[in-house]
Image: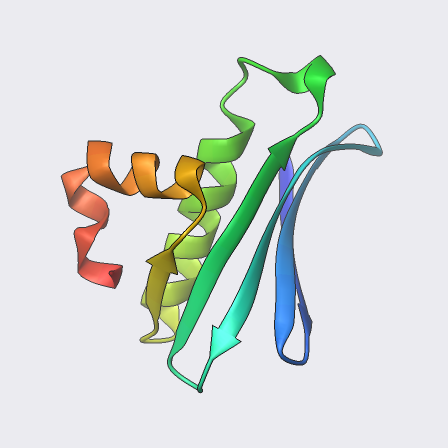
Length: 92
């Protein structure tokens, strides 16, 4: 599965794809220069149960760590992922 990040000024998203099919998308909004809010995570139904949402959250965490950023998970899925994984707390 390929995860790519697209920044579009004040907003952006992480897109998961496999074999040229979009598996999911997680959108975010920048809050200043050092934080972003994950506001929505959506997985296409044919990819349910394959961990697509978590892979996108982990890609966001990796991006935040590499760029010394913080994440505010307002999306219920992203928030639940952070709550269940203590090793992700450093980017909150």
